[in-house]
Image (tube, rainbow, N blue to C red; front, side, top):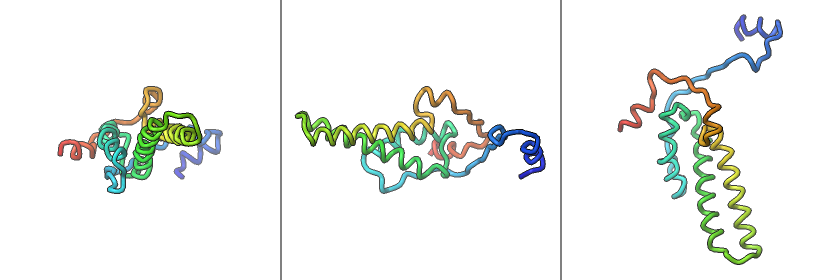
Length: 137
């Protein structure tokens, strides 16, 4: 803790008002273990997040989870469409569909993938954006 941070805390400056701006280097890499829909979602979405400065290698696990939940959502959606008759199977399929959408949406909001969450994200533009090399390839 720097002396100015210690002074701020000592004199009543709450820690939530102290700005931290950690920088992470590197780019996330699409895991081989992703399912079909997850891989497509990675290809469609992650490059945009990188370009906006919202995804780095430090986000690897969360991005993988985001794409996995998208995969589960698509699979459960297809399963639900195959169960037109009311009953236990349809209810289970609907529960899986709803849960996968909720989990996907929760992670999507963290990366600004909704208009409302995107409006609240404040990212400093990078002078040397590592995504330039990735996106130009």
